[in-house]
Image (cartoon, rainbow, N blue to C red):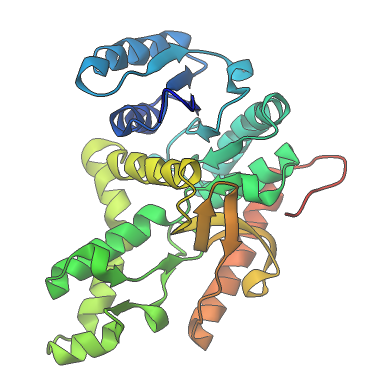
Length: 323
């Protein structure tokens, strides 16, 4: 396949997440060309060299260092640039710095590659996803944020461990804004069609166990930051799965951050909801029935993210494309 249909993927920012993504992408065999772009060109060169020596153990792939003009022709440009949140750092400090990164990168990426997908992993990801969409002036289907994809995966893993089933058989989502405000959609969570609360009752578990599972889901990232400084493997794997669904037109469903236009009663903000990802990027946004409490949580998430978007001051001139 790769020999017939060359596929270029550009990675902007090759810190721990960007480098882990590039390595995971190489092992997947999805790309024929991986371009590493970083303001520290020496670091990008070092990562490229390291990846070169993994090629004999994986797939024939061209790996090179580039600049933003090299995003031209990429099927997807994955933005991992920016600071990661440090212990004790406020989210608004992170917004101020990383919004500047998005403002510096996205307009040129969109100009060089108006037909490509922009996949954002920079935090706070919902704010940065909205900013990337607005600054790019691309249709919203072409701008995707990693959102709560790893949170949902972690949630399914913990639920599967508790009920002794494969996580792939657990259907449960973490929705809203990635971070402290995210929430579990308990009303739709199920295993083989059996609601999670019924599973809990049938297994004789204390309902408080479910609250603890969500707490572990939400706070795991902070534990990894405390222990090792950052998390990178799960998000790298998730980004590759998103790219795979785009390249193969798989129409898989992920809780990615999407710019909403009246979905779930929210507009002009990016939040994580179940989203079909295929060859065009965002193929459609699915509406999952939520309880009244969950709707209230979602709306509050929207207000919080909108406030941060305003603080980030993402401003463009010209007509916006909604779809």
